[in-house]
Length: 195
Image (cartoon, rainbow, N blue to C red; front, side):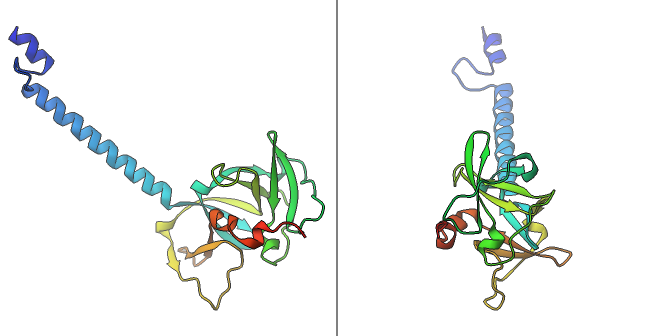
């Protein structure tokens, strides 16, 4: 009878045997490693940004706020909506959902972006605004904030775009503006699409 309890990893009184204690210690170690790996991957995800160009401005966008990225060449041209501002390009059908497309460069008072081969639409994450998208000149992959130096948002240098929540400089000296899509959604200029 004692032999079967040892195989189960417990003494007859329910206390773990040496083998059972080792198994419990191993399980605790595995759970601890898993928790640390998950925390590290969450930190890694929080520090990664989508690198895009909006006109000539290099921008970073939090992956948690971004939804899909769709080539402009794969969708029909936006259908203009009467009595809307010029920076509101119109509506497109993306897999049965109508998505309003905004040109953030024109919204900020700059030159409107020209749709070219590399142009993309960045649809906001469904948790933010599933029916809203930004026109991007191009997508340049991912960047890691730990590889950049945070620089101040000077009062002297006005942000070139609306919704800027941070500014960074990479190792090559290129400046990047971090656009907070949640911040952009709260901006009255962004919300006021009607003329």
